[in-house]
Image (tube, rainbow, N blue to C red; front, side):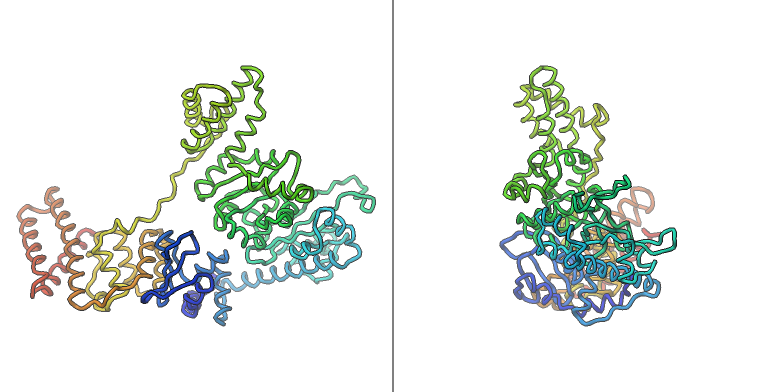
Length: 613
C-alpha cells in the first residue's frame, strides 16, 4: 500500500462524515444519529443512517455501508487512493509514501504529468496551428465544432517525426512510461503519433492517461501516403503503467454524471460515435479503447448504471459473445440492451443526419436476447417448410444459450406464433439444447451460483445481538464481562473477537471484509450506526449477560450430551455436570448471581479449551 495505515486513520478522523455526506444527502438529527433518504436506491421513508462519532454510514434498506473514504469512492467513483487523496486535500493533510512505494508513485506522477502536458500541447496545435486546418475541417464535417473539441480536449499531432518530443523535452523514460514515443534505430527520440487527430483518454477522475489518433481521410489536400503503405485508421497508446485498455472506457469522466442521473450507459465502438451521442443530447456514452467489451468493463459499468445499451453496428452487436454477456448480466446484476440503429448507419452519421432517430434507437433498445433472436427470425426463409424448420432450429439454439429458463420460456411463445409449431415440442427442444450446449454448435454456458448475500440480521440470535450492541455503544463494564464462548453464533463470535482487538470500527469492518467474513462485516456495519434507546444500568447489563449465558450454556449442554452418547464422557459425569450447571443458571437472577456467573464463565472456557484441543 502506498499510504501508511496511520495516515489513513488520520484522514478518517479529520473528516466530519456528517458534513461530507450532508453535501449530497439532506440529513436530519435523530438522537445520536443522523438520518436521510438513501442516495443508492429509491425510497420515500429514510432508512439511511450516519454515526458521526464512529464515522460510519449504513442503509437498512439496501445495506450499503462504509466510512468517509468509501463514501467518496461510491459517490465520485474513484479508487481508494484517489478518494484518500481528495479527503486529505480537503482536510489539509499531507500524505507521505511508504519507503518501498515512493519510487513507483513518483514515476506514476511523472508519467501523468507528461501525459497532461502532451494533451494540452496537442489541443493547442488543433485550435491554433495552421497545419491543423485539415483536421479542423474533418472534425467539422463530422459535426464536431470548436466548443465540442474544447470539451473533449481534442488535438492534432503534426506530420513531423519528433515535434511533441522536442517541444516538451520528453526523455526516453517519459516516452516509454506514457507510450507517447520511443527511441528509433538511429537512437533518436521519436513521436508515436503523427498526422493524426488526437482523442485524449481520461480516467474517471479526469486525469489524462492515454491518447488515440485517427488519420485524416484522403482528399485533394491530403492525398495520403504514396509509397503504398496503408496506415491503420486508428492508433492508440500501448499498455503503460498508467493505462490499461481492458479497464478503461473512453469519455467515462465526461459521461458519468448523466449516467448516474439516467441509470443508463451507452457503449459505442469509437470515439466519434461517443461524441455524436453527446451532441444528440445523450451525454452518457462511452467506448472501449481498441479492445472488445470484457469483464473488467462490466465491473466498471455496474458501479454507474444497471441498464447498458450497446450502440454497435448490427453485425458487431450480433457477434458479441452471448454466453459472456448473459454471465455478466447475472454476475453484475445489469441488463444489456441493443440500440436498433437503422441499417447501414453508425451513431456519428445518424447524429448528423437525424439526431431524433439516434435518440429513438436508444430509447427503443431491445434486450440482448431479443436482438439476437430477431436477427435470426429476419433471416429465416418462411416460403418453404424446410426454411421454417431451419429458422426455428437456429432460433432455438439462440434461446438455449440463455441460462434462465423463465426468460427462455417467454420467447418460446413468440416462436410458436411465428412458426406455428407445437409449444410443448419447442420447449422440450430448447431445454434439451440448454442441457447439451455442445450440440448444434450451442456454446457452453458457465452457470455459476449467484454470490451469497450476507446473512440476514433477523436470523441471528437476539441475545448475542443485544450483547454486541452494548459492547459497541454501552458502558465499559460490559466489555469486561463478555468472552467468546458466550456467543453461540459464528458470525457474532467473529464480531466479538474483532471488537476485542481495540481497533476502530472502520478498521475492524475493513479487516473482516478482507478476511472474507462478509456477514460479520455487514452486521457490525449496522451496529455501528445504531444507538441505545435508553441508559443501561448495572442490573440491565447483568440481565443481558445472563440471557446470553443461558443461550451459550444450552448449546454447550447439547454438546456435552453428544460427548456422552459418543463415549467421550461417562453418563455419570455428564449427568452430574448438567445438574450442576443448570443449578447455577437458575442462580443468575438471585443475590448469588455474580458467583453463578463466574462459575459458568469458567465452565464455558474449559469446554471451549477442550473443543479447540
